[in-house]
Structure formats: structure tokens, C-alpha cells
Image 1 (tube, one colour):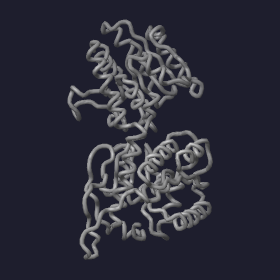
Image 2 (spheres, one colour; image 1 turned 180 degrees about the vertical axis):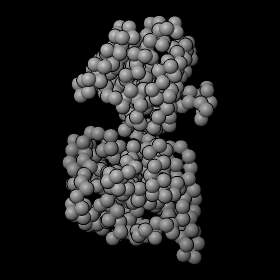
Image 3 (tube, helix red, strand yellow; image 1 turned 90 degrees about the vertical axis):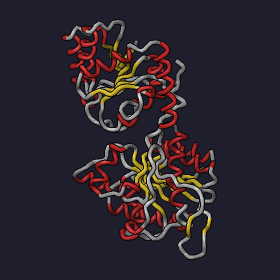
Image 4 (spheres, one colour; image 1 turned 30 degrees about the vertical axis):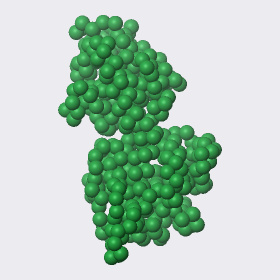
Length: 414
């Protein structure tokens, strides 16, 4: 188990050299010094270790689902996996494969409740001999940090997809930057946190959010625009893109906006009015909420994500690629990290195109390139997109990368 945690102790620890890509900072193999003059000893592994993950509740939503997937991977490695959270449907699934659930109310920033939560964690760490805590919520991170100052345990935290950078929310979210290892879903999410808290890069590991690549799978010229119709999602530009494509000679295409449009009805009406003014009514369809997005992606030829603000989750780009669909997305937020595009990668491994947010001509240019692919080139790109999604975003990849973070800490206990 790690040494007692205090701010000075965190500064004194030797950093682990960073690596790049999914699961950066994974521990290496071999022998390590025990710093006690007794020669070399084998590093600890996950076998026999106890890992405690902290999430708000075990409902079937992204954070809880990822925690359950990681727990399953831990069990397969011979570790003991505990999730502390409010109850939910995933609790039964967790217990079914050998994981354990502990009731813990942590979705709060009330100082008195957080103190009680911290005391509960202290007792849990001591009684269950927890080696690593992994806090994945603001309240959970505060309580975990308080508990870790009182008892020896390693602490891993996970940053939000778009961390607040100022105000009271940024203050509370700061607890997520205080782990011995900090997992970030993207470099975009990490940048403001590194700047605000002077966080050493060697403590960070980039692990993107997982998607269910088992559901979003397809063997297979509709341009699908997924997501709620909302100002920040940028669908207002679609009629302009359609007009430019038509004027440039493109034919036989249609834009289908698949997403809930009742919350921002005025915005949805404005898009329809824009389409009418541009003469694009027949080329822009409003499908409404879609409960079967894998089917929607399967029906599409290209997926368009024209967000004008950094997406909170950014799952559409990953899900489209999991379905083997080329993607045209805004060069914004974490989206460039979730596509394979030049100049970062060679042209022959491209899985989509990036366009400048709000630039209809740039989006039309990218879509024209997508339309111009012949059958062989299209299927080759589709296969690359699927392969990239499986590698980057599958539950297994995310669980293994997270597991490697834990292993890197345990290796230092020897």
C-alpha cells in the first residue's frame, strides 16, 4: 500500500516517465528497487489487490457503465473490485460477475455530508484493506481526498470531459486534479487543469470515454447529423452546407437530423426556416429523438457533427466510427483527438475530416471529399474507422488502460 498522503508527499514522489496514446503511463515490467538496500523485488500486480471505485450511482449511464466494465476487467486479473455508489440497475450486473457494491451517497458538495462520506471511506479502506481508490465524481473526489489524508491508500481521479475553468464549480472540480494518478478523457480536458493546478504531466493518463462497440457495429448518401437540436450543437449551419453542396454540383444527398427537438423548439423552427429560405427543405429532414442510434448510423453514409461548442461527451464521433462510418466533425474540443486525420496521421489511415466550427464552406468541402470516395476507398475507410474505434473506445480497451494505471501505482509499493 502507498505511503500516507499529504501535499508534500505528492511532490516528493518520483514521477513515472509518460508514454503516449491510450493507457499512457502504464507500468513496465521487470524488477524495481525497494529503496531499502535489500536488493530487487518483483513489483506488485493486481492479483490479490483491492480496488475501490467511487461513482455517483449505478444507473446505466456512461460513468457507472465504465466503472462496471473496469470492475469486470479487474476480476479477470485476480483483483477484488468494489464500487461505492448509490444503488441502481447495474448493481446486480456487478455482483453477477463477482464485483461488490457498497452504498455510498457522494453526489453532493455539502461540506458536512462530504465529511461523513470521508469517514465512511476511511472505515471501508481499513476494513476491506483497499489498495487503490478511484474517484470519478466531484463529491466522491473530495471525500476520497479527505480520507486519503488519514489513511495510506493510492488515489486515482478522473477529470470531467469539459472541466470548468473558473468560478465556484472550478473550485469544487479541483478535487478531481488531486489524485496520485489523474485520468483525463482527452488532452483538451487536461489542458486547463494542468494550467490551473500546475499539474505535472507525468501524473496524467489519457483514456477516452468508452462506447459500446458491440452495439455500434455494422458490416455495411445519407448524411446523419446526430444529437439534440440545440444551439451549441451547430445544426443551424446544415441548410447552408446543403446549399453550397448543391451549387457545386453535388446531387443525391439528404441531411437527416436525428435528435430530440422539443427542448429548444425555437431553434428547431429556425433551422427549418433557414432550410426553406435556402430552398433546402427537401434535403433536410428532422427525424426527432431516435431510440435506436446504431440503426441510424447503419443507414447513414457519412456522419456530420457540426458542434460550435466543445461537446460535453463527444460520443457521436466515436459511435459513428464504431459503425464504420466516415465522420466530418468540427475542429473543436476533444473531437480532433477522436478522429484520425492529417497532419497528425498519414492520409492513408484517415477516418474522417475536420472542419472549422461554423464554416459552412469548409464543411461542404469535407463532405464533398467524402462523397467522392469510390466503393473500395469508402469500405477501406469504414474498416479503418471501425478498427480505430475498437482500439480507442471499446469497454475492454478503456478497462485495460485504467487497470494499467492501477498497476503502475502498485508496482511502486514493492
